Image 1: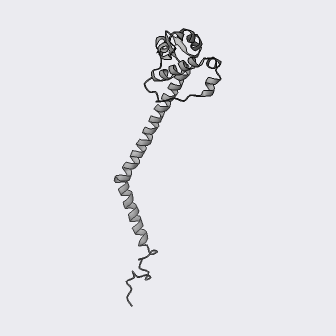
Image 2: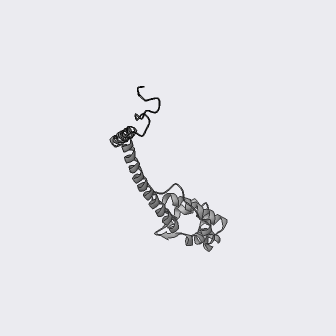
Image 3: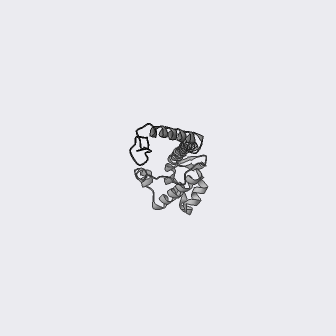
Length: 155
């Protein structure tokens, strides 16, 4: 898959509850994890690739029997169904996140455009005009009531 995340989450309990995994020798577990890492990067491996990457050399023949139940092997290609499902879920989440970000960014651009543009200027003018009308209504300072230092009353 091309839309894979740079990493994945591993749930240790799921592996530790799997008797086929628990029954692996340390060398077979190493082969499993090595394959897991390469499968995340590429999706599938051939048996020749897994045998070579496992580091087991001639012991691959014996380890193969223990590893096969943990993998899906079809037409000579090895994969991990749970890892494929996980990769598909991550890809979907990433697509949805990008779509959500696009919506949010479009709203932000629209708001930014109105804050800097004509609509915001017109709104400021309206507020300014409304404010000026309120200060000349006779209830504020400088309203001509005669109080304060701004009065132009004659004695």
